[in-house]
Image (cartoon, one colour):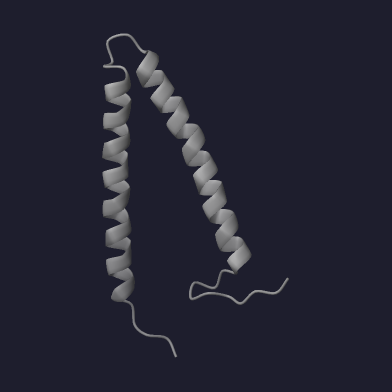
Length: 78
């Protein structure tokens, strides 16, 4: 199966592998942290788990926005 390299030089298969791997690792870490927070005495239980998730999600959105802004500052190729 042939695929063309994207702007970053990665093939579609490499990008898909990276996304799937990141999702799997994020799922495992999220379950581990959420489970530990929910079961720890005095931690706030489920509310604490959702609060941590919301903070991490907001941080990821901020990083993604910042990363897209810096890509727009790069000189054009060609």
